[in-house]
Image (cartoon, rainbow, N blue to C red):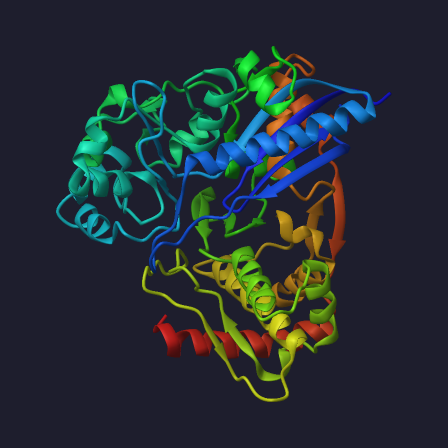
Length: 476
């Protein structure tokens, strides 16, 4: 008998995953399903909330079956999810439109207005120097208010992805400070929605959900949701957190001064900045570039798994014999935000095969992450902590260590967002008195990848050539 466990459900941009953990943070069961976004036109990226719910039902159904086989009893469920994508619901709880994802670029005109004519209002709410980008919810909602005002007029409440899933599971409407903070509509000083920012977005305070602590209990699995998912009715569900906070929590990366990289569909870098301020930068397509290549190879009739791709990449030499890749497949978020950025493969020859192509894509993502890590930095961190799906690949992690020229530390649980969500549930149901005790019991270190000096020297040249290509292609 496996005993009690807590569940962490992580709804990502391309994958929905649930992991069951025992009370020491060991994963005892995993279920996942891809739920990739749609791209109806260049620069657009949307998901129908029904697709998220279908993926959740299948994943939780598979998890319930595994737990029954193991004799394990779930005692709580925590949620984590991608940020920024708003789900509009009417008064009956029906979804009114697809959700624009963080990578959707259609609100460029609204971003320009916010950073121009609307800048004084933006700075009044967020402080001097505040600037908008295409990523958060604010410009996307402003786009809706200008182009589809009837949609917002019929919207009863706007929910973030993990909050929509929790609503379907429990009937509870609400969000947490981390997801609220990602919308660019939240005032961290008051812990509530900012009236001035809501006005800029064109939405009313009554359309925004209440905000609760991430580790608070939000409700219980309803009988209807139990029938659809296989989870027991009455299972407590925690409010949960946005994927960034949940990942940092589940990797132990919350410690002050730690440089941290998350690599999933996109990637983000959190590093110490001047005057003890943390700097946060993000990419648009990192893991998504690898997935794009996998699907491209499959479309050519070459069925390939990620493990096979990594094995092929390991056979190619550092630098991929002159092949370089710029991973800007859906615009770019950093370090230079550019919705018109596009990817590039440069240096192709008859010499290059599949292994060179895979390695070049991986190297391109690593070079991009180094650019984010180094941009404007005054002090280089001695080591980097990394989490996310990429951690499953020793080839990729070793390559990253050598491109960065620093040790890469990984957690035992690569899907740290799911573990972070489970930790919030464990605290919510009272298994641990607070997050600190839960972290001490459930978060453990994994492998450390140390750079090989010879390869680090080789990658210094690769990185310099990559930056030259970036400057030539994008002018950055």
